[in-house]
Length: 128
Image (cartoon, rainbow, N blue to C red; front, side, top):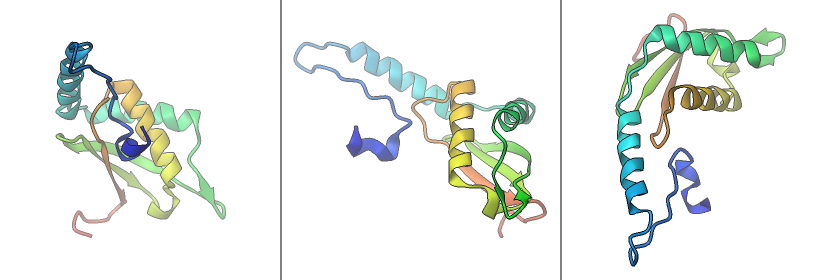
């Protein structure tokens, strides 16, 4: 498991080539991962989940400034890629991003696929 820590999202399935034990589980997991990888989630549903997550665990603060997440949207699939629009990138700590990732994975069943996050400050253009 440590060798695959860079792929924490991937399900580990132990199979036997000799007996064929649990091989069917492998195919089910691959199909499930492919479905998750192609999943599209509406902006409205994403922002409902985001709102609930933010109310459960408040965003971090730094020197009196609090992270504000205005909204998020899915910009592509394969892999699912989401953009967060925030007041300050510097306030968007990786641990809070991980919390939101786990919430999104759990809510929408996004197992077996990587998720990409892009963080943009309000008014920031796509290229910058």
